[in-house]
Image (tube, rainbow, N blue to C red):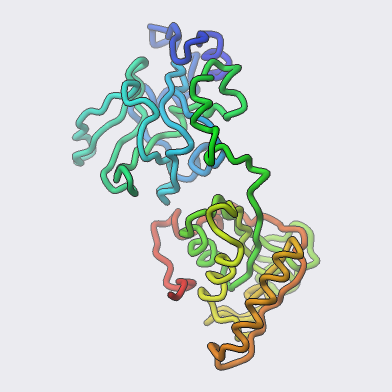
Length: 330
């Protein structure tokens, strides 16, 4: 409802629209959650919102007014569970003000035209800005790059004419098993060029297995992490190097206290190039004498990958925990 209503008001000059002026009309335009966030200064739950893990190219606009606010080229994974940006798309479209609510000194971010509450900005972000605009998904609508022109945001197309506009089809997939997938995923997510990670089950014979079934050692599946990466930023060989360094590839069906075939060390290759690279590096490591015992890592063709339950995705980040295992060695 909100999406359709806003589009009826947006003119060809993006962000210029006639907003409802009375509270009743706004409640019809927005869902209860959107109204709570945007008009009552609410905060949505982390990781349970629609845009925190969105990696597509495009821009983010005010859900009610259509004001252009942020761009995907400035979006980064902060590990907080909310959409995070290095900077606004156009500083003139936002207002920053002191916020002393909840016993904290913060800087609130609002959209200028609609006066909607968006979130807060913090000074703990990465360079080059050092800022983290922590924004609620409920306050945003995402406009993918292919729709910018027809929805009146054509002037932002040049932002995506270079590397930022690399289509998703040019990304590649790598799949690894290195023990408990919670720590493996957390380690891979820290590597620049990794676009998305998903924990799941693969290499076995049971269709659509559950976590409990996999842990019963009756499915043949390994706990694995499927990685979408940009080869222009990180090579498959670098991912392989990280894989070898974050676990012990010499223990059969075991990583530390975790015992069972679901914890086995495995590389599931999807192309002949990946198979060749994995085999070559394995042989190099075997010759190096780096490991005291033989490497038992499987290098096998990728089978169907079954996504694990939502509770297991980004397990440590959701709980604010720091993993003690699967830490890549220099």
